[in-house]
Length: 359
Image 1 (spheres, rainbow, N blue to C red):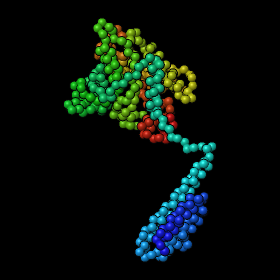
Image 2 (image 1 turned 30 degrees about the vertical axis):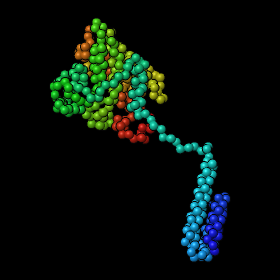
Image 3 (image 1 turned 90 degrees about the vertical axis):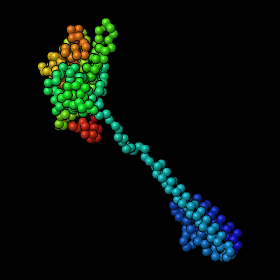
Image 4 (image 1 turned 135 degrees about the vertical axis):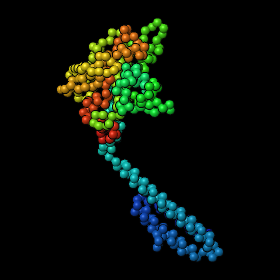
């Protein structure tokens, strides 16, 4: 057989195989075409291989090369047909999808209960005319103690009750230098900074402007973690400085705040909330009180408050004969735990998604 005739036979075989594979409508038809063209016993490709023996001896290398090319083309055409039918089957399955069936629920993120509580507090106090301010969490001795009327001998300065920081100059707990640093133990430090800024910005001959601010942030105390204590927690601190401010103003603000906050909760009633003051002592307020509210049939302590001590006003440059003010500090975790009936403060910081998804 002449080489040209053998090549023509192979070309016809390729075209026929491609047409047969392309026209196969299903897997059975494709299998029948495969047996016809590439079957191991009676396939046309097998017959062409046997026919190569009749090619002239000198042309057999070229005939073998051509046969291998044709074999590759036929196998590629068969593989393409398989992919086509597989894609059609997948498309058919997609078209049969029942859109009325419920889909997989999306896992949505939620705000942490502490973040929710802080946002609500900021919103309520904003409506009462208080501006939210922030301050550094690393403080010096002046802002954390001295300006707040806490002398060097006061037990609140004890190294066991504070997180003092070692610095390049070696200052640490017990140093008399005002530059000793520590993690703030209260957000009252922000009040001092705000009043200092107000005094510094006063024009000659003008009196200092009134102050009406809240500070929300983290504070640090080396407490052993248990159901009610944690070495880091959040406080909301309020301060109002103006002429003629009294304890009655303090009680009214706290009552309005508690009335709004505890009735924002889901399912809370509209009953009036009463505020009770119990005498107490804080170095930076005089008189000082513990603040309780009646909640769910009983009294609940929410924090401390009082009139700003005249020594604190003098320390930052205010004249206590001209202005008075009140301050209060509330524990954010305590308020959130009571509102949501959480019994262990550690649950707020364990990052258990099962717990956090409840809020």
